[in-house]
Image (cartoon, rainbow, N blue to C red; front, top):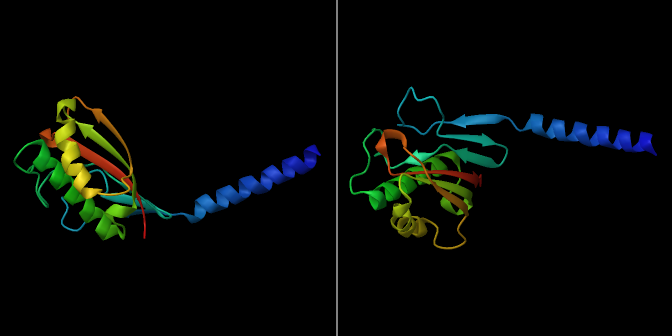
Amino acid sequence: MLARRAALMSVITFALIATACTQEKQTIQLPGSLEGLPFSSAVRVGDMLYLSGQIGVLPGTRDLAPGGTAAETRQTMENIRAVLDHAGSSMDRVVKCTVFLLDMADYQAMNEVYREFFPRDPPARSALAASALALGARVEIECMALIE
């Protein structure tokens, strides 16, 4: 009985390893994004897409969208949409987001804009405050999505 169980576990382990090996990692870089950064716009593994954190920079620049938390959140979400579209996914395929805020007092302002991008069946989400964000941003959002 123990020999059969060990053999079964070996077969299952082999199958899991074989599956993992067939799911190659593919890095995705959004055209027009700044060069020389030490991260990809997204990484695809199998049918999952893992987006790097996005902040509210205007495309192709290091300039944050003017207008505070709401404007930065809107630009952040547009940047997320652009990466998703380029990678073959969409906002309605997002399954999880993590929101980083410079100040939790901005939670409501961020939520008002965020809600517009997920009007129904919103993804799972976590939100937390950070002591600082890249380029002085007030909002950063990272997502995971399914590939269509």
